[in-house]
Length: 522
Image (cartoon, rainbow, N blue to C red; front, side, top):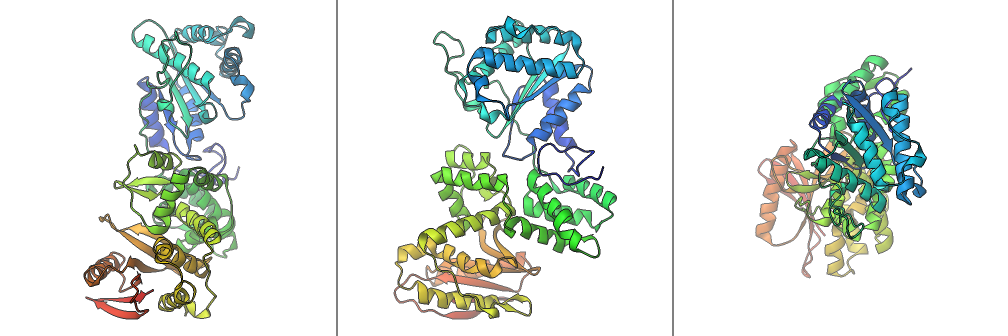
């Protein structure tokens, strides 16, 4: 069977090109071997289901284990109506698992569905199964649907009680229990009958923190590329391409596969010579960010922003205004953004998780804000491109004219708040389909450059600053010169928003050491 890059469902080694997840699985297996309970809580399409499937397969290949896998995806709400319905479903799936694995002696320990009515009955059956000199491991996927359901929380409360009683030598229970979902449910509180010992406890506070890194690093991505190269015969520098894929995706599993899928199915077929190089990777990046493709993952990003006002405000501030937020997971809005995979921890600061998300969010914010706030888009100008390259001096000069003609009448408060947005809105149609812009931290420095524009394999650094006086201006020029050194560039660009009533719209070529900086005041 011809292998493909997979972007839906479970990834299978015999059918799909896969990044190397062996070390991740080894780490998770060690947790199972130690007998702990945990939740694989990661954002959507982060490899959770594939990991659960592989754990199930690996454990059942070992004589000492019996693994039981189930998913709440597609399960009807009626199964959460009462204990009998839930317990019937759970044991029915357990029996089916044991039957497929030909564990007849264990299967026979499960009574007929009519023989139990409550969690107490279910608890007794778990005790029986766990007393048979086998390490029973239960894996439950897609728990988010049930995580706020009182019946499911009561089920977890039962497992918690059995786990603690087993440690005390008073019971037998599952050797390890693994839940998989977007949310970590340790903080949810159980509220059941007043006389219950589980009242107000977290039903999952017995679970350890799950610290396995689930994103792929370049060396793990390269394994996938070598398999592809061997099967397809495509010429490439696998190490360099793996670094580029990581550069665009930050190792987000779905995006690693999706970007590669675009290369294989949309970019390379148009080439006479099948060579996967930087231009091919970049072409796939443009397709996934600007090609008009919509996926459930991208739809979820915008849904989260629409549903959480504070999240919208923070992500907008980071994406458009280059704001810096400390990565404090105890702050509710940062916790939400991290849970949904929108941001990641970058040396103690919040950063949009990857460049693909960043560009998709750019497009979303620009379209939404331009429509709602009446931000005017520029007229096209053929001079924006010179000999196939961006004529950034002309673009900034035209932006200065554009601001003077269209926004000189707007109040200072609006311009202070929306200045960057207006510039990005001006820039976007110029770059659309031809290049992209992003914000990026300087290596070894907590400061952020405002915009790095990439077009035709050439980079341009543009700093956006508010005028705060000559001393601050000179400091800014010095820092920009240092930024240019980081990118081995001789020329940089400075866009200054001057809100003084006495301001003058002007342009200057400024020499800072060996660097040339073109500055424009608006």
